[in-house]
Image 1 (cartoon, rainbow, N blue to C red):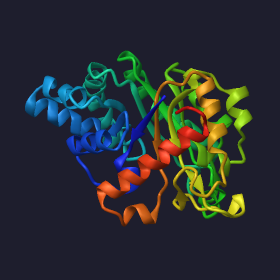
Image 2: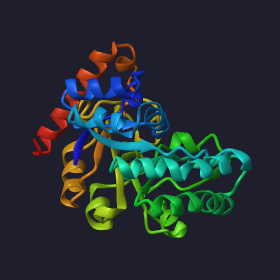
Image 3: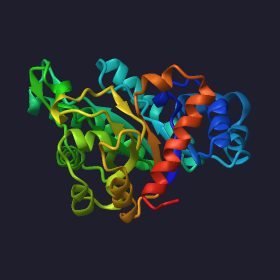
Length: 285
């Protein structure tokens, strides 16, 4: 697995060339990117120019945000599906076969079963397209109870539940966007990773730390850099993922007000230092 920079996750607004430059400058091995932006660069400058952006800087294309708006209306969803084959083909050319998105853990209109069927119906066609190009789709469960509390109907919000949704989609290229914070706030454990997962079950990994407090009172968008508070066992989490043989990107997503108020350079520098510390405490350095 490798240290991956997600600029948006730390409040940094940067295009792909800027993201790659920041990743190189502060010791990351890969970057999260928009496949739509990559497509625009390839169309304007040629695929070789796009590939050179990564290769000349020795930066990997880590993973790309899932571009299909499956939560929208029918026409919006269908438009996303129509655009996906060219995007997946470009990703395949870049040898970046991982994309991921998050799943809302509750809803005010759809009960659990209706919501489950909705997600299977909307995501299966996209997963089938991705499979044709060798790509995997990771789904992130959202753990905090505070996200579910204001809504009428609970939905999938745990590791096991999300694996169940992936199995129901049934395309064989589904897995998890595994976030340590959501594992913690859903009352999951490191043993759930060691005993319940295979390498292929993890598509993308997110790393962070939690603010102190009762687990069921923690907010989704108030977190910390890994090893900043020591609330969560970052070392054991990384060790467990590493033991599975996971070889993909690890991206920090701290939703930190302090980082958002920094310059881009300072925010990426601080994130890189936190990533290095996490690697060290896990014995991966």
